[in-house]
Amino acid sequence: MIRGKVRRSQLVAPFGPGAMQVLADGTSVITAGLDHWFVPGDKLDQEEFRIHEWRLERHLGVEALYTPPDYRGFSQNADQYNTKLQVPVLRFPAWSFCPRCRALSQHPLHIAERPRCTNADCPQQKASWAPFLAQVPFVALCQRGHLQDFPWVEWVHRTANPDCRSIKLKLRTSGGGTLASQRVVCEGCHKERGLEGITSVESPSREREDETTYLTARLEQGTDFSCRGAMPWLGLGEAGEPCGEPLRGSLRGASNLYYALVKSSIFIPEASSTGVDPRVLAALEEQTIARARANLRDVLGEGELLTAVRLRRTARKNAFRLADFTDAQLEAALALLEGEPEESPEQTPETPGDQAPFRSQEYGRIRDTIDSTELVVREPDADCAEDVGRLVSRVRLVEKLRETRVLWGFNRIFAESSTPDTASRMALLRRQAREEGDSWLPAYTVLGEGIYLELDPELLTGWETRDPVQKRLAPMSRRFETVAQERHLNPRQVTPRLVLLHTLAHLLINQLTFECGYSSASLRERLYVSPGSQGMNGMLLYTAAGDSEGTLGGLVRMGQPERFEEVMKNAISNARWCSSDPVCMDSKGQGPDSCNLAACHSCALLPETACEEFNRFLDRGLVAGTLADPKLGFFSSLA
Image (cartoon, rainbow, N blue to C red; front, side, top):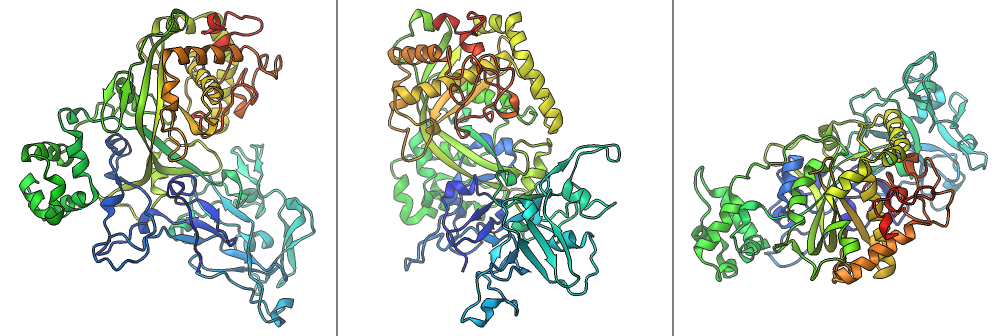
């Protein structure tokens, strides 16, 4: 039986539906779609896995968010729910080869045992056991998210419709480490072909206006062999609808095979929750009471209300959890939880990659003080010193926060979506569309703490309009425009404000690793940026590493004035000089997509888990000044 273990959060990213992983026994599998994550049954209580995050539910257009199920063994307790839940996986690639005789063979996706070689000519067949087959190292994929087995039969016969009567394939190697050393041979018709070039792209030419791939253009001369639309994680290995996109070969362990599209949110209370006791809300969302609410909701007729009296009666022996609250308190909380959702002011359509519309409401709440069960924001004990306080107008200590991360789709080949069609990416997660009122997405939550800071808006507006600042940023902006055109990305405006805040966040995170001992991988940035004098210009530096780091108050302490001033000044001082200078400072383009100026691994880059922008749009020159113009930076006075 093919089995494996994985952390529940990893089933959101990086091993969500459609992602491949290798199990402990060496079997390569692909995570199945959401259709069979929660199999209906008498002992299924899906509400136990519910995550309440109203902003993400409205933003993504789903009814609920659920954590991936955890496996629980069978129990004699008749009241135990959610036992034997598993996230299904399928064996992929379906093609395998024998390590001894090199014969290729294909097996069903749902095969439960590791297959053995059945080739009668295999030398090991005469032994007491046949060797286990090894899965082929190559697959094929397209930009729309489809994935399929490499077309071995079509490739070796150089046609999409081979007429070979006795197809017997073998994957042979000459011992080299390149694709040129790999050859597929058909012993039935004695044809063979190497695999050199299957992962490459062909640029537009006189014969072809559009960019294509070597596999699509060269499999059959004069005919394009395009993507067949296969989705093996949904059980559609061969029966997909052709999509027509160029098909690209790839190693099954390549990093560009799967990019999870994750949307995150810092939980903020709904405005309507004002005046509702948080303890009552917590009691109503407790597992047994939530189950009673769900059961009662199913039997209520149209127009009937879920009242406190009915809930106490339905909860039966668990009603003691509600004994400390009056009926009025319970019904006020029920009105919030069971009532119609309020219209959200942030329904403005947003372009992919533009986080500002979704984060504006979050920005409006986190910059002020708030005390709730999921979010606690307080002011520091005193104001910062004049030199720092003149530039940083607001600092807040986020003593408690809850971040929810939701998987809403995935990309292949390119990390960023090349199409604004969010629905098509979300549709990749399941085979059958969910009925209205029954749509959900996988998610998980982490608790943490952080520091929020905001720059002085008047000084920032005046600084970012200066000609030297605009001139310095021009090469980065032009470079990103070129990259966006080459990779069919949606355009976005690279502003001095974005680069300044983003670079400052990286510098502070790097400094905090020295000042208070956090690893850079355990800290994250969250940028609040939008143009204009009234636009957003803040950042949240926080840790939400789950169980091992970052929830004991160490980061919040660094937000107190006497410590924050030292961290800020040290970060700016260190930004004046990099061990790679003057090469780093004088660079006209480096880093991912060459979209950085003065920023390299020695000064400003972070682990990708900590950065929202894939380590792009960074420049120390706009923060602390350049060698030629030390006064260029916004924080030059602190350097």
